[in-house]
Amino acid sequence: MSKSFAVIGDPIDHSLSPNIHSAAFREMNLDSSYIAYRIPKGELEEGVEGLKKIKITGFNITIPHKIEMMKYLDKTDESCSLIGAVNTVSNTDGVLKGYNTDMDGFLDPFKKKKLNISGTKVLLLGAGGAARAIVAGFAKEKAKIITIANRTIEKANTLSEFAKSIGLDAVPVKIQDVGDTAKNYDIIVNATSIGLQNEPSVISLKGINEKTIVYDIVYMPMNTDFIKKAKEENATIIYGYEMLLGQAVRAFEIWHGIEAPYNAMKKALLGGF
Ligand code: ATR
Image (spheres, rainbow, N blue to C red):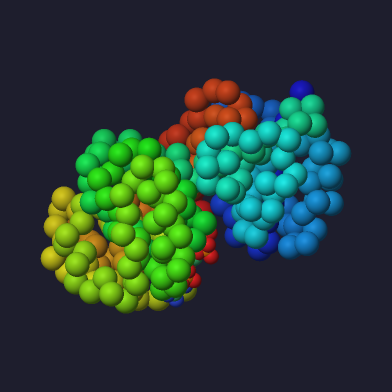
């Protein structure tokens, strides 16, 4: 039987997920389709009812529904309850199960490139929803300590408490106070939305070297100012699209129960730029 999938959110026009998953279906000869479905804020309940009516097999959730969608789940995966937000749902005979693939998607490029996390010192910029999944990932992979730098210090404090509660030592700081300390870290991650509008990096990367891993979760544009500055210092780069790809691969494997065609999905994703 033919299976259908969707990504829901608002705005949704520019989502790359339909391209990535459609390429995977073609590659694996699966009789499946994947569409982008705009559900405005405040209309999630009706939207989800509609998806159940058409017997959707699975769907992804993006801004602004990742937290509210938790209310409409029948079951939650451990990743989802830990992070408190859902981005992937499977539908089995009307029973909706939620997953959060942000953490696995974030970690995927480290695994692919055999880059070590255990025992490292991490600087994380940002303390929003994405940052929370990233903190969970660094805790899982046993980083030594994480400095959480955020414009709003209260959110850095809260996220630091969360980190400590799951066994990761953490220090909150104001993002303006990072100064020229970047060189003291093994891994530096941008999990703020800075860069989406081509803004300059908020921190200096002076003094980092080829061993420093610099990871920007902003994927559009691909070469943010933060990434450009990291390249000038010859750092090891991880691009935002690599996390996006990692998430899509994980969602595919949840829904289809077979290994995802990584290269076909990567090609479709890079074609979208
Ligand atoms: P997401 O789900 O992508 O994590 P979010 O939860 O809205 O989105 O988080 C956005 C992050 O980007 C926050 O850390 C935010 O900082 P504040 O907590 O101070 O709002 C950060 N951010 C957004 N615009 C910023 C800017 N111009 N300068 C500094 N930080 C910014």
